[in-house]
Length: 373
Image 1 (tube, rainbow, N blue to C red):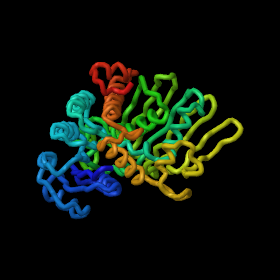
Image 2: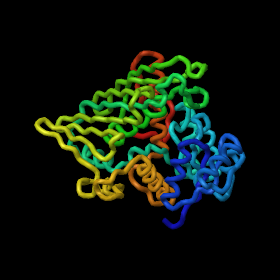
Image 3: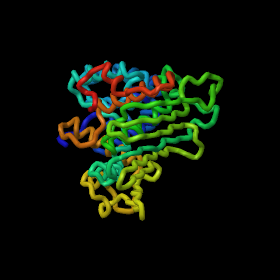
């Protein structure tokens, strides 16, 4: 890298901590933060040792001392902040969902594309070394043609009926919670690994509790989805934020004519390759990984685990390399954020209508050169 970039963080919650650690791990500077109030921002900045606190997000974006804006706020602010950052010629790292509707995401995407700034979305599970190994093997054809893709993303942080968060509010978080928050991670990882695309789906959403802390719940706790892919695979996905004992179990299994491949994010250093007469567990390490991209991301001696923060650090490393002109493979960008927004809208439409929804046709209603093929 020719020089370090200067980052500003919008938001003062948990993800601001994750982003800050990743930026610093890669030799860049976190120079400023803005949160929901000056008091909240000052408190977070003190905890993270960030020197400058702005009283509002507009001041941070306008600062000439910032090269990259990290948007870690409630979802309702993402599109507006990204548009302002693009107009200020700042690179953008925006948490997903990038907007609270697909139409809003398209509006934002045009502004970002027009500005020419870099844009990255933290689908950080792509950056586990074993995920890159799985992707390489599946796309080389080791599974054969895929006929079934299934899995789940399960959490329990909202299993208590009194537990709440801004994400529960459909104004702050958008009309979808469980699917938009974690189901999109599963879909992004599945499409990234398989090279395939969901073309149509039918979805059901439900709530474990109608109210939390005395307030009506406006977003889903659970989403169940059946889907079909462009290459003819059938699929199912279960998403839940109320499954006791599951902290972040993103599990994906791809079943083909030659083998099945299984990955579980709660055990991210291995994958299972299933066969008719025997199965194999492949672990992460320089001696076991055949993909050059996987070995590049494997940064510790074999037998030592790499976790979520390590994957996030690698995401930021590759995103910032791209901002500086050295584009790395597999960095989720604007097209991936749009893809995610289209899937959220399709899930909500299907859940409301009780019918199959064609995701591709929905996307074509709003054309943009950034839409993934």
